[in-house]
Length: 182
Image 1 (cartoon, helix red, strand yellow):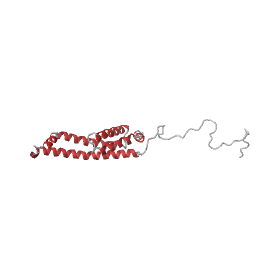
Image 2 (cartoon, one colour):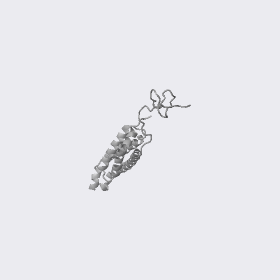
Image 3 (spheres, one colour):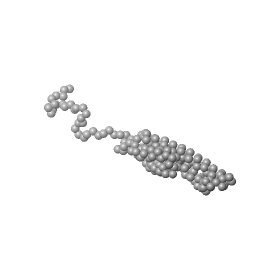
Image 4 (spheres, rainbow, N blue to C red):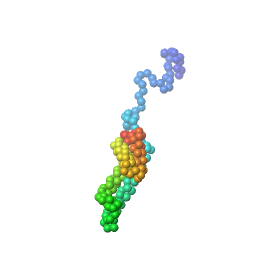
């Protein structure tokens, strides 16, 4: 079939490829089940968020070690308070004046902070923006506590906590925690 002269209005004209014909323009293809205009979140946890999760577990491990040491200190103080040889030692008496109950309370605080780190790390896979905010607050408080009372011992805690706060606070971390849940 011949298309004829392109200037002849009565001749059958060919339609160039990719050009819509007369009438309404073509609609975009319909996306089945979802798509509804909402941007999809990341499908895999970003590397920074994975690193922050691992750092939370490392912090929790250090907290458990600290709780064990604090518990042993409480046992040692309790046992030494009854030792008659140390009754005349002035330096020990200053240490022994500290209540054993206060040492156990500090031990429980250390252990509780470690459990909180484990729970936060475990919730990174399914948690929402509240887990992100809690991890930011956890990182900041841990960094401050690592600097002030425990300068040398808390240096590792401080560095890890700052990295947790940075990795969770970045834009890819925000996108991960604010992604739509299915």
